[in-house]
Length: 115
Image 1 (tube, rainbow, N blue to C red):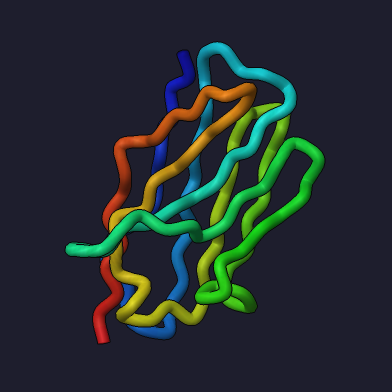
Image 2 (image 1 turned 90 degrees about the vertical axis):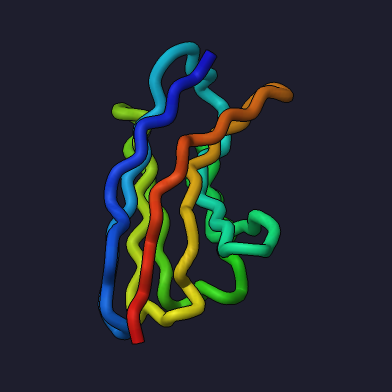
C-alpha cells in the first residue's frame, strides 16, 4: 500500500506560477514512476508530467516549456513547478505512483487559473 500526500495548488492569476508537491509513503519500491495528471470538468484525466527513478522525464505537449518536474528520491517526493499558467490549466491535479503493476493516486488538488 502506498499513500500519496499532495500539497500546493489553489487560485493563481494567468501568467503566474505554482508548485505542487507529492510525497509517497508506505511500501515503496526503489524502481518506480511518479508524476502528475490533471482532470478538468467534463474531460478525461490526462498526463501532465512523469519522472522515473532514473530521472527520465515525460511532459505533455501542453506543458512543455512551462513545466518542470523533479524528484527527491530520499524523500520519495515529486515536485511539479508550473510557470506562465493559462486558464486552460485549470483542473484537479492528481499525484500518481506506479511500480511492478501497482498504481496509486492521490486525492487531487484543485488548481484554478483566473484570466
